[in-house]
Length: 172
Image 1 (cartoon, rainbow, N blue to C red):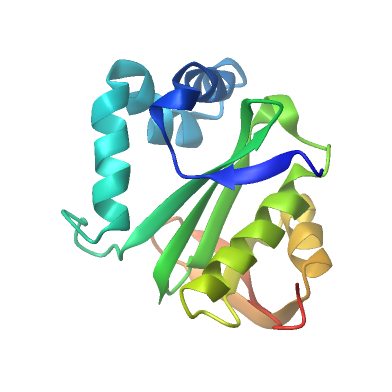
Image 2 (image 1 turned 30 degrees about the vertical axis):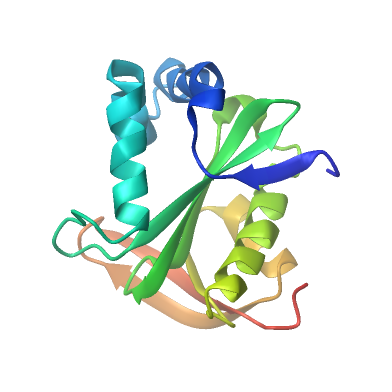
């Protein structure tokens, strides 16, 4: 994992990120494909929107300032993490996903580890992270990163039960 790092979304990874999005389409994971298809349709506009949200510009109602990072390995985008500058109930500070084409390789644990460090850089010492109670892989990832289970919550918007964790500050 030494060659795996977070980058701010950029034109340098246009082709790789578009392949990332297409992988979701091919595996019929519609939620994430819908989230990223704008990058296929108009990459420059997609990047501008991400940059604006990171700077607190044109942030949609019910959202907060959010900085996106891409997890890159061997010049390929393998994951995306969203670092929210304020906690959102039911979503926490950090949301992440790993491309279906790159799962079960340790990238989930690594992307969360690096995102926790980014959270600390902006003053969030013990970020909140959530996952669906049936997403056992994400549960293991959070726990490997020193997640302390706070309990279960219900996300009305997504109509799902979630585990809510606090990442203890012992994580480095």
